[in-house]
Image (cartoon, rainbow, N blue to C red; front, side, top):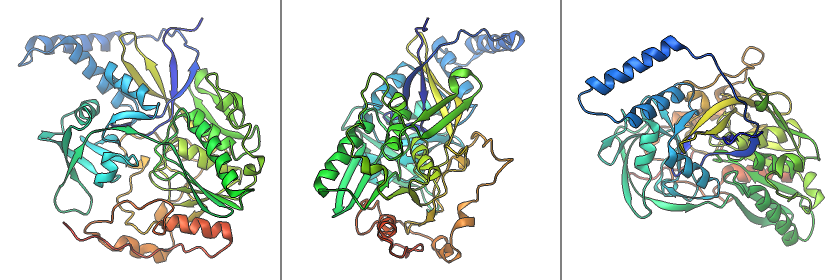
Length: 471
């Protein structure tokens, strides 16, 4: 009999203000477990609880103490396990629908400060110029140090059109930066496209949401109609994609792979955490969906494909890039991805709260773990910006280890970059130029991807981008 407590497998990176986290709503069988409890340690916990209740300088509610204890228990494991109260859990569920309120940034805790993993495209945070690696030290007049991640997230949430001031530390800046943000209801369009030119297409996936697979199928059919025939090349842009639903990642991979090719497999301690997911509707069209890829033109499975990744490409986007790379179905171009190769499971509790617990690691078809390593592109092309601020899973405190460390060694970006690119890191930026428009004339990586598809020389060492004068 299935338990009333459903378990949801989750693939994602960090916590999103708003909240957008990657969920895989495939239901796993609940196992009734009776672990042997450490009675002596629990007695100590009860003793400490009692002392705080009786001796702390101010009265403290039982619920607050219990929630703080649970928060500490989960956050002490790794950067992605966490306790969510009822409100945070509701926000998590709403975020997978592609609409949520907040600032639109994905964050993690680092040395007591909130660290920006990635701003979500078109969000208030993105438009204001927040960058991956920024450390938030103040929220309005409240110091972040001393707050839990959940508390900080709650303070950043709020009603649309209300304002908040973020004080941020940024590497290379002598003084803290101040960002005045206005909260908004963020409606995210996960699949975007441009008809670049005859016979060449461009598809960008910003997150892997509940309907991303279906939206991609519609997009591919529409592009084909615009082109009036098969494409000679396609660019799939996964840059700054923080992850999302595992089902959607499998579906996106299946759009370009032969049927039944292995996309990803997972390994954990319990049987439910061991899965093999293939390019098959049984694995990507779950929750009662039909095979949304059945009407996608078959020639897409053979169309030359270049996939763009960068340090903001995490988790589910790394699954897609890794699968297409292992099957030699696509050329991966850009810079090293984030490196989140762990699976979290959402476990709802009977009081409306939930925990997000790391339960497995995932592996590419060839058995590679990208945990704390990331995907190394086939062709390394920087974007012309300073790379020293880029954040990776390996930079996060208490990150999960890579099980393949003893067998293989993944080179660091500094080891695979062309030596002539060292000049990129030698230049100190007073203030970097704002976000570029993807697939525009200023998008260096996209231009080089098009060169790959057309058989033209690839410029691997872009010029330093001009910086804007400080305001």
